[in-house]
Image 1 (cartoon, rainbow, N blue to C red):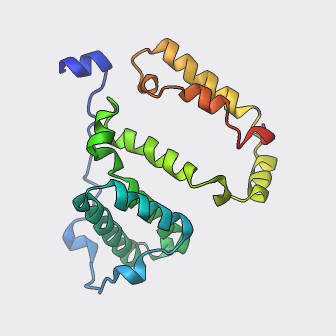
Image 2: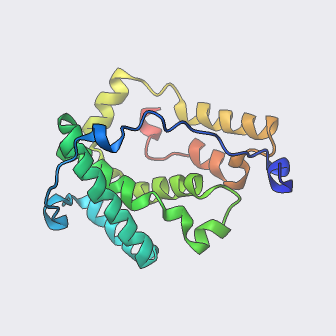
Length: 191
């Protein structure tokens, strides 16, 4: 272990790529890809795209859009039952935010790996687009079926317990995280 991994307890997790189909097994077709035709035109994707274009270096932004195109092609050719507007909206958001943690300012803001930091940034950014992305009626239906049972306080307590038990945990770098969770104004009426 390096001194930093000893200090923070972080080590890389091995992964197995043996389940990825070979080029011979994939049966890939040659298709025409037109970004203007396959890119979702929704309010949340447009806001996320503006944000990514502003925050990412051009090379990373272009990479994110290429990843979208490749994924779109893979889904339409090999997993056509997944090919729905909502799937591609989610895929576009994933692609736009997947490397947001690699920017110089985001990298230097934490000891977290860029993937984790990027996840927090994506969450905060998407939440900043407004709660109107899920209607009040949908929230009422979901909470009616799956009550929150004081979830904000429950999760805030879990965060505080982890920090107490593991003072090196990732959560310690998120100043005010437990308090923000406990003070979730959006869900307060449904607690």
